[in-house]
Image (cartoon, rainbow, N blue to C red; front, top):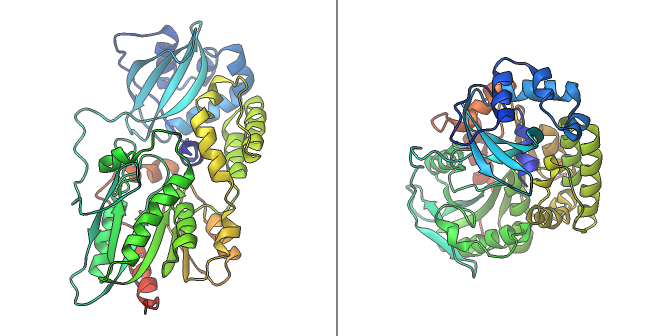
Length: 425
């Protein structure tokens, strides 16, 4: 699912390089030309296939987007040989949202791929949270934090479900994302008399042992969320249980809610469109004509639950790996607008007007499917729930500002919605 959410962040940027022990002339030239803003010179480094796929116009646009988001190149490194005759070099940036991988063949750039940013060895330790609430998914323990307000008697509790990628309980992903948004949300809700549970996804943080050795499907994350809901519903400390899902966690929380029947469901920045269609739009905006055509064919096959074994261009082969294909097939079987129409509990669907990853129109699609739902679009809120302008570069800078508070209207609005929900008898 990285493409769905990270390629929408594909406003990358590249600039000054210090080569490591293993270098390549094409990589060195790419960095030098990028620093000089010479898109035509970078285009000259491409293989014939890359030139046909990207075109000079797409290359210029891509580099402008990159230049607006990630800042300068701060390091290059050799990352191995993904296939015979190919070498991979990683570019790390001033703003480490993601890295770029240059795929080199015969000293030409045969592909440019997006990769998760590598955590720096001297990176500050993530915010530690008490490990005091867990469930077991038969593979291992899923660990989380329960935060209780100072209150007498029963209180509402919110289960927070994170989005795609290796997201921990605080809505962080190592070097790639440091928002602390779930931590701030939990603390804000507690001030308003509302308890919360947030957890590390399977394979992440203290839940690393709960990762199934087989290919992970979206259903696995749904099953995990159900375990937490069932445990919270049985806990006598709570008057009502609310499921809150963020981004991909919205789909996970929706399906878990249909199965476990909590007292309410909240979707934050959730997608309402068909996943295949969303991805096609991304490819059309970012890829060359030929790559877009191939990607669309692959997505159509996956939507029909058919794995693709054909040889793919380098730019697509790292996206449509067997494990990613399996995950996408498992995700595409869910029609979120149909599913949310089945919910008979109170529903809040919220989004932000400056969300670069999930546009406000997605929230409107979900709300249209469930007319009884409450729809709220927060002006000036982005995907990580922070106040942010529409400018892409400034918006993405908030992703790695863990001290930046949440959008000022978010916690009061959520608290008001939660406190109005009837309690369980």
